[in-house]
Length: 220
Image 1 (tube, rainbow, N blue to C red):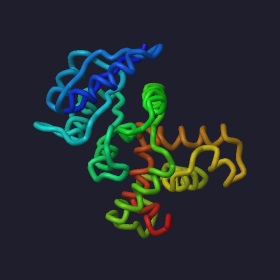
Image 2 (image 1 turned 180 degrees about the vertical axis):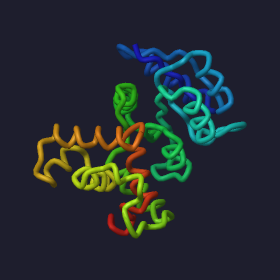
Image 3 (image 1 turned 90 degrees about the horizontal axis):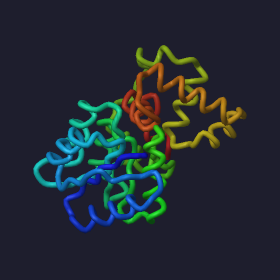
């Protein structure tokens, strides 16, 4: 059973999402919170597997709440909810360790799928969303003139895969591009995350752009 905490400052949204998720097999809503402060306390109390986190809330916003929660509970997965498909707060939440984000107006079945994906340990960041995010924000990073020391642990093939992940490609797309089996690509991605001590694919994307290994210019 996947335990879920729903965080949003609008009561109708909390109740609507809660009712929808609670009705699904294998999902259980264990609590609600109306702001970031309450969310941090609720995670301490209920120890959910997944937190649906609104971005803009009173007292403590979703970004700060995500950071606090993941500092105290590194096994909790945070799925950020927003009304904007490109939002600076969302990018910062991903940097803070969130496992992905979803638009509030997404279809019900997409919300359910997103929760299951995140609960299963994967990251939810669609390629199209990745491209929009990096085009908007990655230009802030200073391009590296050489490969950062942290990435020296990667093989040449792993660096190549990291670049393609950062450009928003799925494993299947990377496999086709490099003429590899999809399982081989999955193995490379897993090794990249392990070697760089990253939670998931989302953090790999952020790292690639922040270190300048990939730049926004290359994706246009």
